[in-house]
Image 1 (cartoon, rainbow, N blue to C red):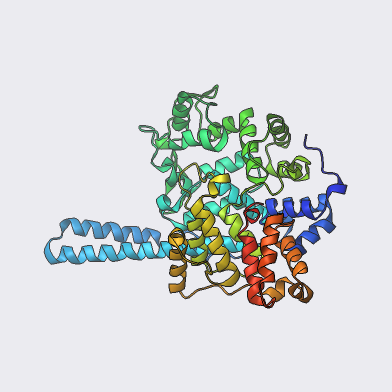
Image 2 (tube, helix red, strand yellow):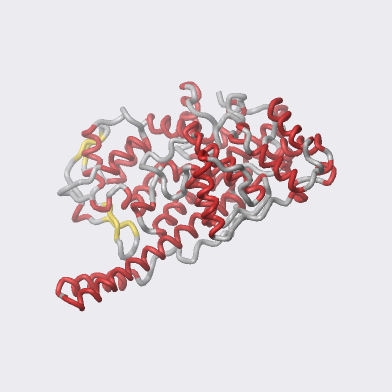
Length: 503
């Protein structure tokens, strides 16, 4: 188990697989660079990403609001005046309050749109692909939605926490997430008091974040909630705060340990459980490799993780070097998530990503709007990404990415994709077509066989199925000339095959 892939098996196929899974894919030139590096150096390029400078600036507003105390005081004063006012004065004050609320909502909406575009640009262009891939993993694992948090700064800060701890220590990550302002709001820990401990976070940290169902009991939930009291949020400072006067200082018994336990004690006890290593290794393998790993493989992964001191860097290095990671049951057998589909498509097409508004509409249509997972369990993933409507939307959006327009004939089944396309047209922000001269050499643009081979290598890193290749060739044979229009249509057709939906 987890023996290193022989160097003789390091080739274009395995290098492309590493690029797809440890990052978001890329053009043939990036794959060739990995081939030339060899397995060990290629893995090191992804895993040891801290060696690569990253000068990406944060959004200008991604910092605590120094005027928040004044704004809160102004709002409280306005509410006090409203309670005393009547008649025209009350109407004027209510109007003023509504304007303040609208302005706050407008600012949050604008900042969230900027944040989504900022992160997608990091995924497309950032110098550390694995760091962004792991940030995406943790976002789905510790699923937190802006729909309840309602604070763009909190959502950026959580994203930054995931990035800083992307391949770090398991316990340190758990502590950082537990103290994260967005999580404190999302699972109501900020409202927990010794008189009324809130059990939401205490339950989910075991059930969804670190152990899984069946590895704790209701008494553990109650005792963990008591231990976590005092961990709350200072809304003026916009930061975690420990308040001893609302902490339950009595003895608790949690997962077999008894004493005046604190929140840190609870998280330490959770991460010390052998099941915790098995749980997170299983979930990480499912995200980066394939679903339902064997018990033998999970045991091997958990052993590496435990020996490393529960650090993800050494686990990921072992995974990416292993023969199991490059097996036929793993390579090109995973359904692309909407984010993987969008970011990967932009990268292989070597184009600029569409504006943030368009990207967000695309991902919402496809079922994975960033910073808005459907619930605390996150996105289901796998085959759940492929519904009839979502698959049709991918085909429509492939046309938008490649040609800058929706070229499919409308009918009742295509209504959803057409509606989104119309919204984008109203914004007058249709993306530019792909530059075929940038993707293909002149001889590849003139010769049909060379064109098909080049597109297969770029988009699939493999061969089309015989029936699909025949369809593509018949389309090209029917064209009077291999001009840009014909080539763009060929790219769209290939992106509309079932194989392109896999990575």
